[in-house]
Length: 437
Image (tube, rainbow, N blue to C red):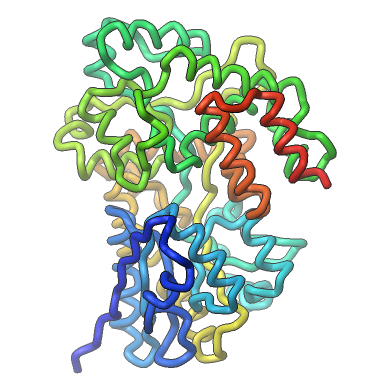
């Protein structure tokens, strides 16, 4: 018997598309309570192909339990999923990053408590990185299934460009600042940056806060301490990033470049930019789109260097400990069962794990060391694995650690900071108004 594959819809929607139109566009791939479960997740290759493959495999193995999936570009998805959940029109399976956004959903009763399900399916929990459950847990209860890969933020560089200019990779923040005029003098942007996407700018602050003041600085924000942003180490970090902007450290016009287009990564592998701070997932994109850039050994990578006199441990990292799947509390009993069966038998199965590794990613499933070592990307995978496993602190991306409201204010002010339209003190004042209340 032929098994019908799911109808798969791509919604790479612009931010200006009205939410009502966006939800209507989802059609039967959206939150309908009949005809199986629905699932929204991020588009963009090579990751989209792995996600779609997991859905296809599950549907083929479960002809009476079909999942219909819809894909969105990153920036569009963040807006659409929050709006859909708030309107009671969420898909059955909600893809996300856990943390503060998940906590908001939990407090509003919008996602299913999975604690007892994990107790009954302990074998599912035991096969995943224990550290991946922190961002899935709210007040001691589990509300999301950790999935996919561990994603630290990495400093990439173009070895050919460095050789061309006759310089070495930076070992400190002072080195970074010293490299800026040398690359600019050769007509090469020191750093690529998809600044229109906002969260790409945020990665710089995440590391500078940690390297200068240690993880305690942002932890105070997460814990809601009054005026936590006023910490002198925070002011120092905000000041340093503006010094880098003023020194023309980033590609000209960075504020109009989007990360969803992968244009920032193309600037690196084409030699128009020397360096780029980006997630570990970027390796697979550069491998797929950059010709022989990766295979020839031209791509270099390192963790973010220390800041002279800083309190942070150089092993600390930031990023995504995993990705997360929640179940809408509004879904029908049938849909919830399909979702849970997908969690048990469709997430991080052997074929999916192999695809993630082939794409240069480290899956969060335990026992993959031999497969990682045998991969053509073994060196990068080991590098990523070491960062994730040896970091004394693995900080979650700020826009996911905070509530959606605070995260939106954060991202808007980061854009203004990078555009030099507000000062560090104004940034601090604006953020203190939405956190620590």
